[in-house]
Length: 411
Image (cartoon, rainbow, N blue to C red; front, side, top):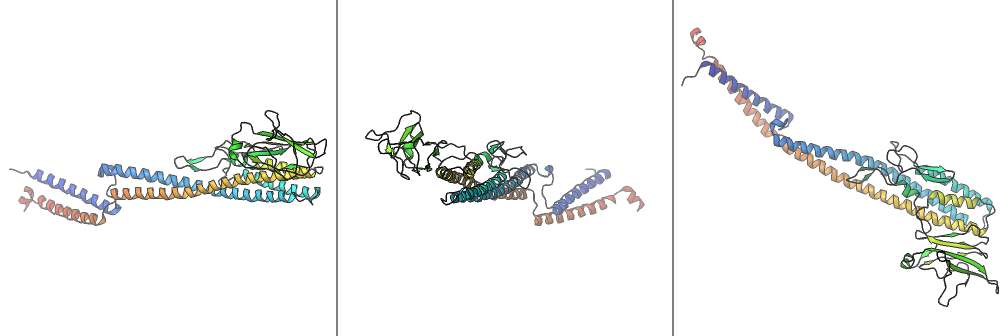
């Protein structure tokens, strides 16, 4: 078989270029530490690397959201903690207002204290985080979520909170109206109140539930305790009236009027117990009805301030304001503490999500490393082999160059 000189030259150059390319690739792998630098190196491995990079990118994005949620929830927890402290101080002021030795001057001073605490609580309700986002606001809003309109606080915020990551439920705010304005009134189950035109010095307690099923099983939860004077003995009596039917409740003997004893539980009320203290006058009445989710700390304090600031209020009106105020503040405190506990649980969940996300990122990085990283021992060995092969090709080419006829003639 005849081999032309040109063919030998071309073959030697092609082999030289091929081995130079292999040497260059081996050197690039050894220098970068990557076995796969472009899709053409290994299409299947490149696809795996791309999926690992996407997973890692999602994990890092979630970590940024986690940090934002943690910052907001930490500040929210702090704000709610301060709200609990302020509400507790307000409750203590109301307890002090019940001191029988206090006169209008002392009560007016306590009313000023409550007014100051109200202002601080209102500022907390509109507090922002370090980035200027409202802790109790609504999505996309920069205006204050709560407005004091002539002594009545209303909300401009939408219900619900802002979520940073729906899949992991990472909140960036909490439901402000629910925490601040939608607290159950009374004792959380039912609410007691005194009629505005009462002339006596009686007041009704917040009451307790003695049989939840008996109270919950009734269609009507509106009762009135009405007082009268026995025409014969002159003793104070009371009757319990179902406000839906207008009829008085009767005991087993059919009696509908009962003698009043200050501080003793009123009979016939289904599943609940309330007591009336002081000295109610004939014609006075007290109402009992279902609790409603419309109480807020501002309304509770405003009612207490109004009663304590009134120099003409009698002892019964003052004590009613004090007892109602204490009951209201207990409900408000419960709402704040419940919201604070939920925020604390959110912070715990954030720690758990952060741990899981970190593990996902590490797993993605490990998978990517396993696919695209090169074994350095193997890479160095490969580079050495390619270098030797390239040097052999160079020597072979230099020998082929001397096979030219012209070289033979000139020699």
